[in-house]
Image 1 (cartoon, rainbow, N blue to C red):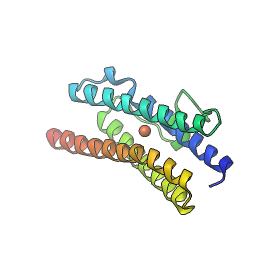
Image 2: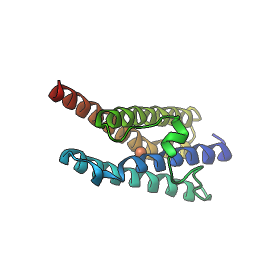
Image 3: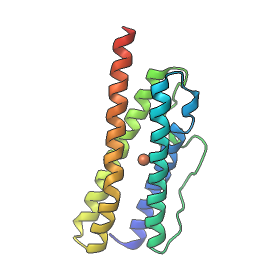
Image 4: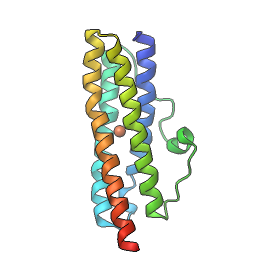
Amino acid sequence: MEDKQLIKGLNKILTFEHGHLGMYKNFLDYEDKEIRRVFRRFMEVEIEHINKISTIIRNLGSTPSPLVESGDIIGKLFGITINFANIKDVLKAFSFIEKKSQQGYANFIAELEQNGDKRNDFIAELAAPNMLEAQLMHLWLEDKLKNISSSQN
Ligand SMILES: [Fe+2]
């Protein structure tokens, strides 16, 4: 992957990661204690993702520059409106977004690995844990959604 294209891809990922942070940073607003605890940790994980991607960009000699850093990033990027008063709606939307994140990382990593170049392989290995964590968050959200649905029916 060309340097310019690589930096562009990383900045795009960084933008999504800022969006993810925005999903969980209001963890205290939730009634469900488990959700408060889990979203707090998810927030910390998203901060780690932002820091890791930013560090990679800096190590490549560039400056992290997400397209959007705050506000309704998710709404802007996915064109979806989340009804925060409805916890099922929140879990469904977040689960969808984490699944998209995992897929986005998978595509990015596959592209990096196509080149068979050592630097790109190294970046792929740095990005892979973020992909795994997006998948873990997606699975937790799906599981919580199932439990909430069955306890309400
Ligand atoms: Fe993330």
